[in-house]
Amino acid sequence: MGISLLNIWRRGLHTSSARLQMIQGSTPTKRICIVGAGPAGFYAAQLILKQLDDCVVDVVEKLPVPFGLVRFGVAPDHPEVKNVINTFTKTADHPRLRYFGNISLGMDVSLQELRNRYHAVLLTYGADKDRQLELENEQQGNVISARKFVAWYNGLPGAENLAPDLSGRDVTIVGQGNVAVDVARMLLSPLDALKTTDTTEYALEALSRSQVERVHLVGRRGPLQAAFTIKELREMLKLPNVETRWRTDDFSGIDLQLDKLQRPRKRLTELMLKSLKEQGRSSGSKQFLPIFLRAPKAINPGEMEFSVTELQQESAVATSSTERLPSHLILRSIGYKSSCVDSGINFDNRRGRVHNIDGRVLKNDDSGKVDPGLYVAGWLGTGPTGVIVTTMNGAFAVAKSICDDITTKIVDTTSMKPGYDTVGKRVVSWDGWRRINEFECEVGKSKGKPREKIVSIENMLQVAGV
Ligand code: FAD
Ligand code: NAP
Image (cartoon, rainbow, N blue to C red; front, side, top):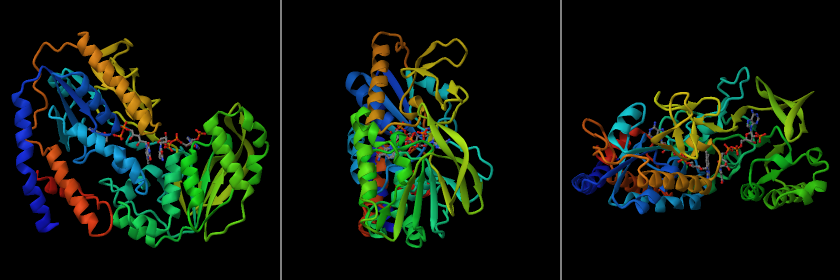
């Protein structure tokens, strides 16, 4: 850090305050606040800024740094997916957008305060918890969520001390979504392939000492219900020095159903069948072991027990048979979960999302009526599924509703609203983020990586100059 850190900081300081003054001076009539600087927040901002030419959009983000799961979720060896950051940066450069990093809804500001200070508030703060298996021993040290493991290798502040135990041969991943496959790939990839990515230095160091040789990817349903997609499976099948082994029994009768399947599912199933057929032709010192029709039953020392299941109308039903898998480390990858960060939010605890109709949030009472001026988009509104494009389409639709409600005066914009009051807060502006970005890229360059992420919030704030 030291001198180069300070230089980066000094270079950008003046531009951020100039921009704030410009927006404050222009007294626009409509003020919209977006909570969360992930894909949903940025795509919504993009559409709102395009459609409403007399508005200011303020984006309030918990972390000093933007981009949500694009920075802290998307796998480091998928840099092309992160190109959406360029679009988000263009949106952030818009003269009527302000970025308030390091401000957390529920901690630094309440929903009521935001509603008093803005004509409309859009919640897009995502899903930062994970679903549990509800099994005894789930809190043991060798059982961790895929969410935490992903956060660890991606440098989410607070995840750096996870210390996953990679000293055993067998890892069991519960769940067969794309997150599970990302995690399996990170565990089985040759280290050289990861060294040139933005995987955090401490994770690379831990992975270099990894003794993991076999990764079981366990699903409670059958091959036709696997939640991973073809591109991600193809990548696994191509990993050098990794042999994929399917269980022939899992595929009994599957080929007879091919003709009934929709095209993407058909292609995925054909790929699994092809790989099964070619099984044993190549070898590797590591193994990727997808296993179907096994539902989590118990966590025992050094192993995980599963019920053998049968499918009944696509649902997994446990039989009396069980199977035990050696499992030094267990990664639970059964989905993320949103949380309620402010008591003013009408949160559906059962479904883990904000109560809404097409992005319009319902009043926090039992009336079932829409609360004008309050919206939700992204995983917080839909639940934790969908790729970035899905999130984009949803966010565009909600943003359009916001513009429509303002234009048709369902949302009253006649009174002046002051916007967020930053006095006494350590707020990271967009220029502050630029300084962090420059710093990370500079440090990364010297190591042959696209960036070396700063993990400590305090260091981020220092580099940002706040
Ligand atoms: P998020 O991206 O989670 O953004 C929410 C933002 O809100 C974050 O910046 C967060 O810090 C902020 N926030 C949280 N709490 C508060 C608060 N209290 N106050 C203020 N701000 C707050 N999709 C693809 O298309 N390709 C991929 O390769 C891919 N890989 C993925 C890998 C993983 C591990 C995961 C979990 C998902 C992946 N996805 C991928 C899906 C994609 O990441 C999501 O569709 C998308 O990020 C959801 O966007 P969002 O804005 O709803 O939430
Ligand atoms: P997901 O796709 O919903 O997969 C969750 C998995 O967990 C499913 O296999 C599900 O099985 C299983 N599961 C759920 N509850 C379970 C339980 N109690 N016991 C056993 N298994 C259980 O979720 P995800 O993997 O977290 O991914 C979230 C979203 O991000 C997805 O849309 C995904 O495509 C996207 N993403 C994309 C990429 C990419 O494009 N490369 C990478 C990562 C994530 P059932 O089907 O039986 O419920």
